[in-house]
Amino acid sequence: MSDLTESMLRRLLSFVPLKDRLAVTTVNKQWHDVIEQSVVTASLYSDPLIDSTDDQLKLFFNKYGAQLKYANFDMFRIDQAVSQWNWRQMVTGLSRFCPNLLSLDVIFCSRHKLRDKDLIDVFSACLSLRELRIDAQFVTGHCFAHVPATLQRLELDKCARITNSSLFCVANRCRSLKTLHLSQFENVSNKAIEEVSKKCLSLEEVSLIGFPTIDDIKISTNGLLHLSQLPKLRTLCLEGLGGVTDRLLLAMAREGSAMMHSLEGISLAFCFNLSSAGVAHLAAFPRLKFLNLDGVRRRELSEGIVTLAAKGRLEKLLLAERTSVSAEALLSAVKTSPKLRLLDVCNNPEATNWATARELVTFWSKKVLVDGTRRPLVVLTDEAITWTQVDAPNCNPYIRPMPVQVVNIDPEPVPHKRKSVFSRDSALQLPSGFMAPELRRGNRYRLMCGVDPNVYLGDQENIDPLAGMSKDMRQMLMGDAWDDGANVAGMFFKNGYFHGSNGQMNYIGDAQEMDELFG
Image (cartoon, rainbow, N blue to C red; front, top):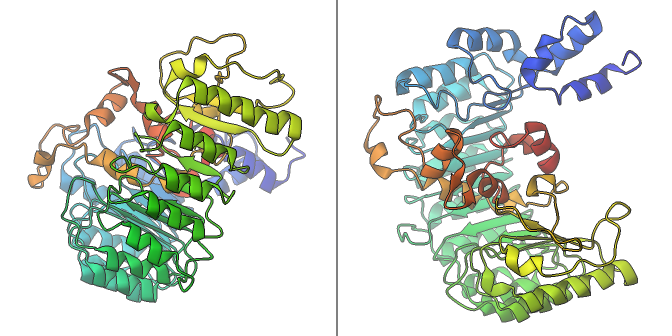
């Protein structure tokens, strides 16, 4: 260890939990200096600092705040009867110790929410802020008149009080904005989307998330069409929106579209006005390789998926939550997609049957083992019975990876046969980048919609600390992660609910393992 350079040692120590890391500062002077310099992030839940008293937290932030680049207050005081005022004072007060902060997360905090005044205090203290992720339920948006011009990523969940004028401020001040995520934007209209599309030309990721059974969204097909003016757009998530129609995709796919040659991933999950013809229009995008059609179940999509897959560019295909696609079309899409690495058919029994599964495994195994023209494929499923009966090809997994790795997200143990195609690994053990959280940001909002709406009729200070939390989240935190045979933590991971800053996953599993998975 003494031969390691300071940069190498700092990198190694960064994987050690913060409390354990600080405990070994007395080993020698070199370690002391390196460890002191390595404290650049503070995730109160995963480090863990969440059990520290207010005085201990103030002492920590007073000592290391000037060098912190990332702070995550998710789950902060979630299990304690702390008033809204005291909680807000702690968050804003600790932020004042961090003048060089680049990224701030305050999303999952049960009944505790930030207000505009709190954000103004944060903006005035953190003048170089680049990334902000918050639950914006009580934010009206006038705070964005003070937002730092350095902001590059803005994620606002449950922003029903955000208006057009709020986004006008963002568009005018944050010309370098690269990522914009909005959910439940009931008071935002086409004009705001047009303004953002005209002035924030550096946008690379846009997520607009609605709820498929709620018609309060004011943004129409014409408003969404303005997004096609973004020349650098790589990832577009339009989920649960009635304005996503075949006509919209046809207009976006025309040659004059600025995003035509930049778009790489698109999510149209739970967009019920979409049909097979609309999906087929996506074939016109020459760089499109990631597609999420989770929950699009009202109209048959088989023909469109086959047409798109025939271009041979798809690498990730997400068809979970009963997406309307036939088993025959799914098999055809897989056969014509030589670059495919991930196929998700969870909660979609109509898309796979035993015959289809067997033919898929046989075909892909031959392409990998015999022809050498394809790379191994990961299939996510919760239908153990279908895949357990499919035999694995003759391949030593200790020498080379299996050509088809079927991963079961259901917590129930799979009855393994000696030659079963089922993997013994869990989803947590998949290689980096497989779960595509950037295409499933809407799942975070859909999780938050499980909160009892009666809790938020006002700023209720003295309710039960976990009263404002969804049933699933409450069970996970209270240690009962089993509900009707579903492992809540596994479900959250599979859907990428907790995708945090810098690829960190701060809520389930091992933090280091999550960082490696999504880093």
